[in-house]
Image (cartoon, rainbow over all chains, first blue to last red):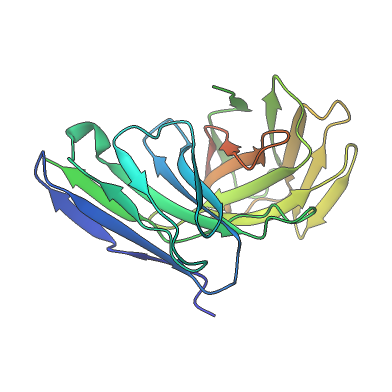
Length: 114
Length: 111
């Protein structure tokens, strides 16, 4: 099993450009989520999904879009990148049943917006 | 939004020393998770706690689910250089699937 796979690992964008960060998991996890990590601020939840076709907002959703058309994939879209979106982005997944609740993380995608 | 307060923010210790860190919340958690993150990597789960008062070990690591359900503690015994990293507490806010994370404790071990 590959676990949670994120691509790309590094990306540089200019302000106003759009891009999609990809996340795929092969563990048949119902729950998937996106976090951003900034220095001194821990991980903050952007969006999450509890199954195909269902998404919801986290703490910092503005400027980001998500969709969940399959169980395996949960892409994160930046429609018009801003320098404030420079960060490291992590995708995480888990089973959503009682007693599960353990997130498995990808290796991260480092995004720089100039 | 809801926050997890983690302390200390950073620690510099000598190899062989024991380490303690804690995490507190203003609201109740039903699950506490402890993660470690090394440079350039995603967080990796160390210990998961599911019941108030629960004490769980993973090698030299021991974590406890506070009896009030508003706090949790992580201890590392006899630290070694590879313990270096950032340690995060986390949990799903009650009744939701929104996992929130503490701001982390940065640990450095001096050989």
